[in-house]
Length: 272
Image 1 (spheres, rainbow, N blue to C red):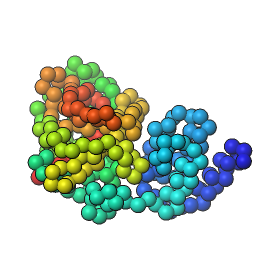
Image 2 (image 1 turned 180 degrees about the horizontal axis):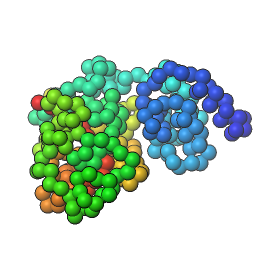
Image 3 (image 1 turned 45 degrees about the vertical axis):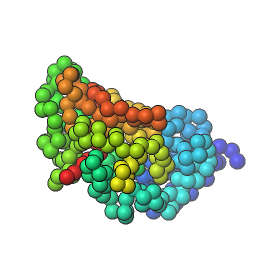
Image 4 (image 1 turned 60 degrees about the vertical axis):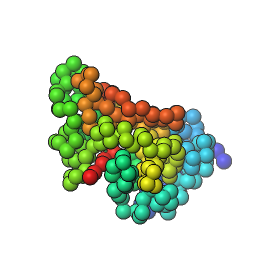
């Protein structure tokens, strides 16, 4: 079958299926699974590299017609809640509070996500809304450059600058440097949940959380999706006013270091 006929055949099939779906299959990262994702995969098969990190929907390390079929099945039937299947959550009513023992109590989901494998929002440190462009010019807690960063305090947990607290309320907050350090004492595994790469942490008490490798935002782009995860702490980096502590990781391991506050990173809340 010619590529043009192949496109219209599968486009028609996807368009005719109107049931809602989970976020697995969101190839173009617009937070919906629909015909535009079918188009994105077909373009990837034809040679486009725009969505090469997300077009392998079925996780077989090859981008081909089977990924188009996988998206059509998701649109038609939805995808199972892999968080329950993987033993991360007791049921489908996310977010849950996951007891990680000495590491404290963590949410099963990122801020802006409705399931453990969803990337959620990307936030500059101390900001509480997503935006189109991430740089020093758009960062609201400086005067246009890294050398003019405002002092928000040594730790913003529970304040007006804490996106987890602002968005979720109650006792939810961003994790501190010390809390992430304790989390790093847990067993760590680079794995895949619902077709999404990320890092799974398992505490001695059996509690587990999965941090998807959501990449990061800078300028008007999204980078390293599926390859690296970047998660803010609530703690200011003491040596440089333009940096805050974050946990960065990939398939080869991770670290807890300082990074530029103006970048858009993920946030995984904690509570008491």
